[in-house]
Length: 450
Image (cartoon, rainbow, N blue to C red; front, side, top):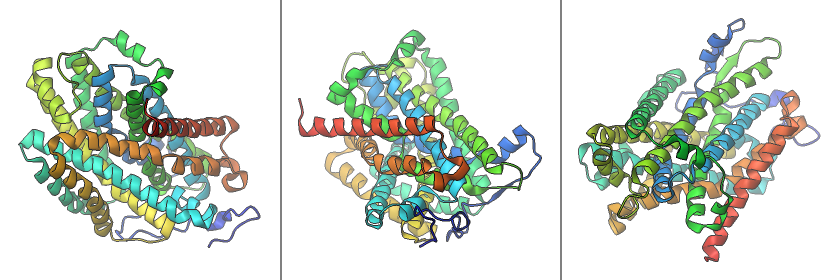
């Protein structure tokens, strides 16, 4: 246990004590940011951690929820995507603040500052969120392999276990090269959907109307379920743990008010990366709403069905090809960060480090079980339901990461001169309250259906 001050907070010189992880890729102090660099050169050095986090905001789980939302309700839930993205930006900025101010990530802070009895339950819930996220990435990658190469889904699911070897190989090249690879995959996804928007040419007036909040969502069980799925797919619990660790991978040279400067640039990094993720998520919903909503026949909710229908509805096979390529890129880029988040969570809560291949194998094995069972028992048609359910699970686990995060950033003795200003504290608690209200409404709609 670390030495503490009168309020039980770690003393400042004891806060940053993480050793390099067992993979040899330390998430701390890998990139030097020299003094005297101009704004753009500094941003280039700092840019990267938020990109690794942002891939989780455009993983296949997001695709499934956004596709279902757009196909079934048109543009009505577009405001949920926007609100969730803004909420994610606010919470990720608090992660940056916590990591820079204390030298602790969210898992370490939770383990050391919260009651001891809460450590194991919080760790288990964080691990559950990581497995739910990995399940979405696994299923999304398998679906993409089926669409592009004709592989059976069950074969694709099993093949995704091999991405462990890819992850281990990539991590040996260092965090900057890993960030560059993920950035390239994110750019590929964004480029594919930019072309899809050109092919679709949506009614932008209707799109703007979809950005207007609709409180009636809380009264419609189906829309509420989709909204909770969008929220869980956008504001992901494990990303809060990961970002608070990754932000410390920049080693700033000694200079006046260096921590304030580090926070400004880390926040700018988050703004750029998460804005791109928000545009991708919005584009998926717009594509589904503009192409599938209101058409004769059953509602399009399956990713494979959307892939097949895009060509005849948009008049070019390029639309389907781009959809499949983007889905594969999204699944693979997201899976690269799941192991990193798992290491941060396990290290922070339990002070336990596993070799990356063991950590990856553990997470993927737990995700493989429901995926394989679902395909065997219910067939290929169960994939989208499983993806949406995984995102709802993430939403239900969110408060247990968000509430400690906001509480820590509101503690003056812990945060020092990087204490979150009052307006930011109010907005943070407002986000936490909204998440709790949505989750309680969802649970009540299940227990007492109308």
